[in-house]
Structure formats: structure tokens, C-alpha cells
Length: 577
Ligand SMILES: *[C@@H]1O[C@H](CO)[C@@H](O)[C@H](O)[C@H]1NC(C)=O
Ligand SMILES: *[C@@H]1O[C@H](CO)[C@@H](O)[C@H](O)[C@H]1NC(C)=O
Image 1: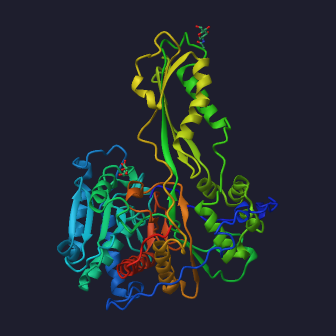
Image 2 (image 1 turned 135 degrees about the horizontal axis):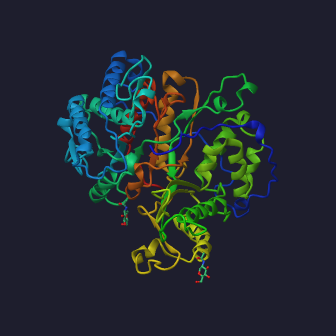
Image 3 (image 1 turned 45 degrees about the horizontal axis):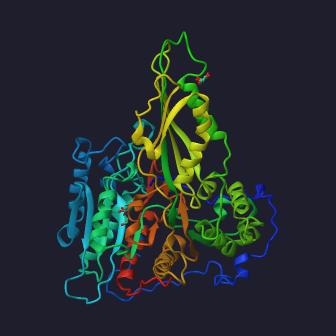
């Protein structure tokens, strides 16, 4: 999962903003949403009796626990790490994935004998359970569950408490790279499907599992090749519901707020699937300038000019890096839920701020109060990440290259980011007598290489810019798919032993990073990204000592198992919008 884990931390002491409450304009216009209850709980979903064992067996049966520890540990032991430079699935560097497939075939014999297992682009896996033929006149749309087989590489194995590919189990956590991102999800999904098949279950609609193998390197080889196949097979918007990794798990507000003020138990648990993702692009700046001996230098070398460009990109305010909490931003829904269900733990001004139509001011106050992890769900970001230039202390640098990474807020587009960069760079081009080629006209590089002038700057992107993802529905009245997903989530997590007696509020949020779902937009409007672990159970993703609480793994399996059954028993699904 390519994102920074975002907590709901609140610093109650730094919230000095005051708000006037202008009349909410949409109310004046008679918006049907006005006056509607904020954040109603989704009705719980009761499963029809299907003679299958109950999902509660997962966290309660010791033999299941031992079995899952063994499966997950074995999966972690195969080092399916990917780097950005791995481009050919037939290359030797991908050998561990072949071993991984062999392991899956050993661990899940029912799946491998009773369902269709396809390998896409050699290492992508698509597993399909089709309904028995001839059982239905009215075919129902498939369900798609996704995860990725690859993991991020490790840096220094000696930094780890237990070796990163040991899959060590300490009685509580399974340790190792991929244990929580996201072999836990992949093994959990396969395990529940294996259990369903073991009970001779047959689906009434296709159940599809799709596992890419380069999500941590942008996903073009895996999900990028699986998506067109699924679109060809099921059509545009042909999938009912997609669940991938992601989201912010399950947490309380109290644990991250100034809890010393509160002694009572916090009985409200927030389940936070992601219902959108920010956009992303890399701007690559390549500068060529005349070289020469450094004893006779120009006032500004190529490094100086590039530094001036970066300095200006970082210091020019062109109004693009301002946060916004517009009426449809999922974070607004989540904050409304907190105001409604946890009034004692939110900022005193939050309710009135959410009534304001000054979306920027509200967003800025929320960002200041809750920190950068929250801020960057509300605004675009810019980070100069690579800077290369120069080869020798007595030679002028001839080539200087930098890469600036942008994440695009939901209210903006990659074009806006590119235009801003051009606007800032233009005067520097003139100042140093450079020529330049910009994005779309990069084909012209070399036509005017700047010979005899100051030099030439090329602006390009490494791959097509990614727009912010369409926001998936989260209204239980207008989206029956969301209502069913949220209802099952609530039923499951209000019944798990670790959360019994709590109220589970299900609310969407957005990711600052991206998942493989970026390739699946055409397949469904109902795309949810959620690795459902309680706070403190899925630790150190992308860094040393990654680990997963086995209880969280078993609880996630409850969700997968009940979601498959609940959607399988269900005939609804047409969005009423
Ligand atoms: C740019 O070109 C103009 C005219 O040719 C010259 O006067 C000026 O000094 C040049 N500036 C730089 C920074 O090279
Ligand atoms: C989605 O559909 C559009 C329009 O048919 C197509 O151009 C695009 O490539 C598809 N996207 C993906 C990720 O397959």
C-alpha cells in the first residue's frame, strides 16, 4: 500500500479558530440532503441460514489460529520484493513469485482444483469461482477482491528484531516484510474461499480474486494487465463491488486525542475504508548547459539554475497548495460522523466549522488541529525527491536532473500542477537565456537544443499523470452496495470478541497514496480499500519490524467470509442515483 498511515490525532489545545455560521446555502436552495440525519448507522446485515460454519469460528478456534500462523508465515518467508527497475516478469529477479505460486497451490488445494486459476503476464493471478452453469437466468455481477503478492524491499536486515523474511510468530504477532502489507489480506482471502469450497459452497454470482505482483512499483505489470482482461470479460461497470487493501483500519478517537481529560471508556469504534485516492505525478526536469573548466565559470552553473528552479517551486504561493473540505469530500463525512457519535472527543468548534461554506478555512483549521497526515488528505503536495548533477570538482556540470513528486488533492487536477510549475519556471528560462520543451511538446527536444545559448530545459512526466480517483458512494440511502458493505462491517466488528459491546461507525476517508485500484476504475463505482486491523495490530508497514497481530488477521477473515456470503445471498445492487 503506497501511503502514509494517517491517524485521527487531535490536538485539542491548538484549536483556537473561531467560526461564524453563515446560512448554509444549500439549505436555502432546498437541497434534499438538508436536515437529513448526519452519519446514520448502517443497518446490520443478518445472513440467511446457509449451513456454513459461522465466521466467529475464525477468532475462536485455536486450530484455525495455528493454521493461519503457518500459512501467513510461509507466505512471508518467500521474498517477493519488487523495485522500480524490475520491468520484465520473465526476468530472474521475479523468480520468488514462481515459488510463491507453488506455495499457494500447496496451501489451497480446493481453490486450485475447483476454481479457474489464470496467470496474467506470467505472474499476475486471477482466480474465478463461477456459479454452476444453468442455475440462473438473471446473471448477477461479480464480486472482486484484490491484494498484491509483492512487498517493498528491505534496507538493512540487521535492523530487524526478527529477520525480515523469517515469518517469526511470537505468540501474538507474525513478523516480517509483507506480513501486514499485504500478504495478510491475500492469505486471508484465499483461506476463506478455501473454507467455502471445503464446505461444498457454490456461488450464485462470480467471485473473483485478483492479485497483482508489482503494486509497490506502480502496478503496471500486474493490475495494469489484469484490469483490461476483467473489463473485457465483465464490461464497463460490470463488477458489483471491489475490495482492495488500504484505509485506516479501526480506531477510537479517544486514544489519539488529549486522553488525559477523559477517563471513561470510548465505546465508539471508527471503521475507515478509503473511498477515494489523491492523484499523483512526477515532474522530471532535465537541464543541459554548456560545460567547461571550472576555473572559468559562469556566475550560475547548471546546478545553480536548477537550485533556483526548485527554490522557486517551493517558495511561490500560487494558491494551489491550499486545503479544501468541499461538500463532497469524504473527510467531511468522517468528521460529521465524529461530531455526531463522539462529541466529547472532537474540537469544540468543529460542528460549526462544518456548517460553514468557507471550505478552505474549515480545511485549514482541521489541518492545523490534526496534523500533516490529515492535512495532506485535504490538499495537494509537492516534494523534490531526486537531484542529480555534476561529475567532477573541476568540471562544470553539463546535465542536471531533478524529479519533483506531486500528490493531487481531490479538488484539483494534474494539469493545474503542471501549469503552476511552468508559470514559475518561465521567468527563470528567460533570465538564463534557456530554451525549453514542456510536457506535451517533449517530442521536439533537440529541435532547438539551445546550442550557443544558455542551455535547454526539458519538463516531462515519467508516466501519464494520475487524476484523483472517482469517489465511491457512501450514502446508505442511495447506495445499496455501500449500505450492504457497511452493514456487514458493522455486524462483524460489533461481534468480534475484542470489540464486543462497542458501536462501530463506518465512514469513508481518502488515501494520500495509491493502490492497484487505480487500474480498476472502469470496472465499478463501488471501490473500497480497506485492511481492517484495529489500532496497533498492523505495524510498521514499509519499514523495519513490520508485523501483524494474528487476531487482526482472523478478524479480517471474518469480514471477507461474511462479505462474500452477504453479497452472494443478495439480489440488489442497482444504484438509485
Ligand atoms: C542573455 O542574452 C542576452 C542577449 O544575448 C545577454 O545580454 C545576456 O547577458 C544573456 N544572459 C545570460 C544570463 O546569459
Ligand atoms: C477505462 O476506459 C477508458 C475509456 O474506454 C479507456 O480509455 C481506459 O484505458 C480504461 N482504463 C483502464 C485503466 O483500463
